[in-house]
Image (cartoon, rainbow, N blue to C red; front, top):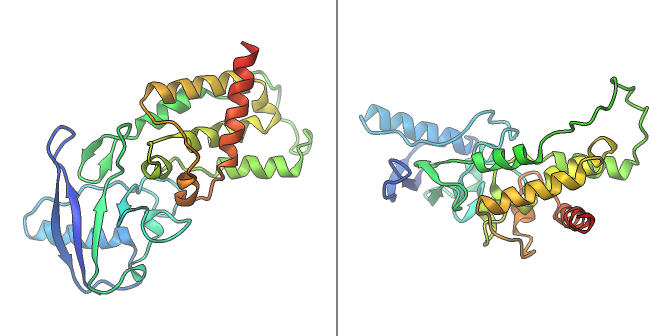
Length: 247
């Protein structure tokens, strides 16, 4: 398979970026999208040109590093996957593919397709961890938890922090990410004790970092590679309002 690539190139955060055109030929339909960029970079290096900078790590759909906007969709034209799980068989032979970094004020471009996502780390730091003394390690079945709550908590915990929700949202909102982090703990006895403080701190940090507000378009849920539900946003709103009412 042959492809024409229109890729965003930007030397540094303050440099002016432009789209540049490339071609890759003889790519197998079973090649992953990141492997296709590897092939292109190998060609560029052999030509003495600067390779394209892009983020990646596990290449197993776990780390959330492969943050690419492909043909107008976060992670490309497939559902419930990350970019590293996208294969070239999803595209047509000879197709022109546009590749961009995440577009969000909170995720400034570092170089080419690499963006700075430390804003997510700062939100997590604001939320903190379970700091109350829970005693020794109990048996797994010592604290009864309703199955539907455990399932919801695990759904929220499946968030890999890739940032697709922010890049997809017309407002650049991080509500789904924050809601997932709050829900994963708020639904469990260990995290409920500090739930109010955590919700207030994480929402405040999110606002401080310049993320937009949520207008419930559900674009974040549609493009989330792990299918995290917007129902967690409703829970975050409840946790936040209850915390404010207590104040």
